[in-house]
Amino acid sequence: MTVNLLGFGRRELALYCATLGEKPFRAKQLLHWMHQSGAADFSVMTDISKVLRERLSVEAAIDGPTVVQDTVAADGTRKWLMDVGTGNAIETVFIPETSRGTLCISSQAGCALECSFCATGRQGFNRNLGVAEIIGQLWWANKCLGAYDRAKGDIRAISNVVMMGMGEPLANFDNVVAAMQLMLDDDAYGLSRRRVTLSTSGLVPAMDRLRDACPVALAVSLHAPNDALRNELVPINKKYPIRELLAACVRYIEKAPRDFVTFEYVLLDGVNDSVAQARELAETVKSTPCKINLIPFNAFPGSGYLRSKPDAMARFRDVLLHAGLVATTRKTRGDDIAAACGQLAGQVRDKTRRAARRVIAQTARESQSVSEVVQ
Ligand code: SAH
Ligand code: SF4
Image 1 (cartoon, rainbow, N blue to C red):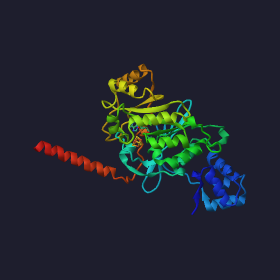
Image 2: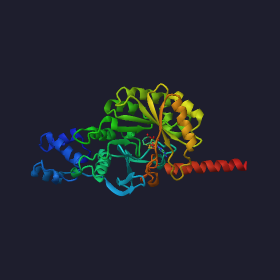
Image 3: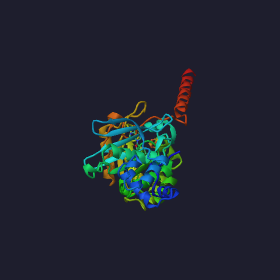
Image 4: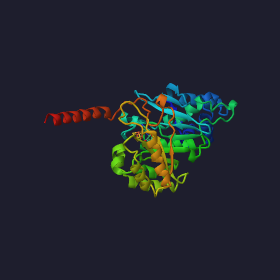
């Protein structure tokens, strides 16, 4: 069996080279070729001896993702659907802007956390992605966007990475951290910690581990001003309520590359978008150094929610601004190709049988309401 070197970090590559009787500096050469030149083949690695290249071609591989669909939205947002085997597919999204390009990367096939307004959460969960599958999304996007084409100069199409695609990155901690370490490694992608953002729904113990292992910029999906509503929208809140979550944010900031965390707040019509809720939110976060990113809800079939009206969104933001908070409204990108936040659904073979459980619950509710009517 061949080993896939794409997901190997500096240390693993050095260990692997040692097993071949090679010096550790080979690891650096391999990192450069794979991640700075986009090599998919050992034969191009001209500073490595022919004998070693031939041996690597037999015993190792550089296996990138299997891309099954490539779609470009009217606003230039680009989405790749990648087959990750056994009937599962994940999505990666590139968002070009005038002064930067952001790649939104998936960490799991599906998600086990069941946030009520999220298409990925609705699908159920199949499995964690491996390191090669996570870093392979950046490797592939760079290739597609021509960033490896030296003739065109240093293009750097991707200046920022956000771990905000399908899945909860902190529920796949080791693989996500290993992939992010490659993003930060100067011999691989060389991104600064400020330009890599991880978004979490709030797995408190893992936030503490991240602070010690790889403190990148942090975004936290808050979405509600109090526990009662957050329990409904983001069910992991029942395990790690807002007070504990905010304390973890403050601990995180001690080591973070920025002196604030970003709170994400998706605005759902009539659910969490009132003026009173904006005031309550301002009160809730007042002791946590933060910026608030208001996200217009992106619809998907059967979501059961509506996007807040533009005036409600503006009022909500103004209340936060008046309270002295920094609040911005996120521009929706790529929604015509279902590439916007929360619309990523790829294809997931749900091992949690969530869809089946939902049907059973629905049927139970319906038969209960029928019996109420009959009585
Ligand atoms: N699991 C992580 C990261 C992936 S989701 C997390 O929950 O933070 C990335 C962001 O998109 C999160 O803030 C999430 O709450 C938000 N999101 C999910 N569904 C959405 C939808 N339908 N419309 C807008 N944003 C959504
Ligand atoms: Fe999972 Fe994030 Fe979607 Fe919640 S919002 S279900 S944590 S991907």
